[in-house]
Amino acid sequence: GQNIDQPTEMTATEGAIVQINCTYQTSGFNGLFWYQQHAGEAPTFLSYNVLDGLEEKGRFSSFLSRSKGYSYLLLKELQMKDSASYLCAVRDPSGGYNKLIFGAGTRLAVHP
Amino acid sequence: DTGVSQNPRHKITKRGQNVTFRCDPISEHNRLYWYRQTLGQGPEFLTYFQNEAQLEKSRLLSDRFSAERPKGSFSTLEIQRTEQGDSAMYLCASIVTSGGGDTQYFGPGTRLTVL
Image (cartoon, rainbow over all chains, first blue to last red):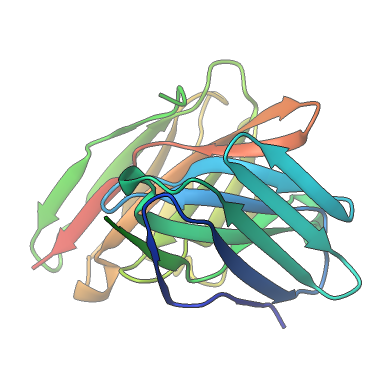
């Protein structure tokens, strides 16, 4: 079966660092994506990992361990505008068409 | 702006009515996905097109749902005899291929409310 787990909610303080974890069990794996979604809006792409290790993009970094079925998104120097849901998604190559399997998302609230 | 557009942005309808949504993907991109997202959940895959061919459909896509992409450009998703359980955000995504691999970029979505 397909299972992607993330914490439901997290809170953090402006200027701080927060780590959002994601574990997955899927029938296939062809990359892991993180998306940011503000309330009522569409998901926007943040990062992509297909090999083990850390990918850094400005204030955002994403880590992948394929052997552990684990990823995290690290957000540094938090800003109020980072309050949003963060979606972990695994690209499933079964059937050949690389659809995304999403977790339920982690709602992050950044406080002053 | 990802370049993927969807219309309408919001649709309110009465139970039993038919509705149709449109997605215009990034120009010249031949791969297009439809997803559905309910409150507090991540998007769920509905169907996939490569050019005009519908190559994969989820079990979520009951026989009341039909999707088309007649000329391999824009796509439509129709829901017949809507039910309250169809209330959701319907998202369209097209693929951008870069050095980081194929990435799905989402349109703004159509929020459907069935009364």
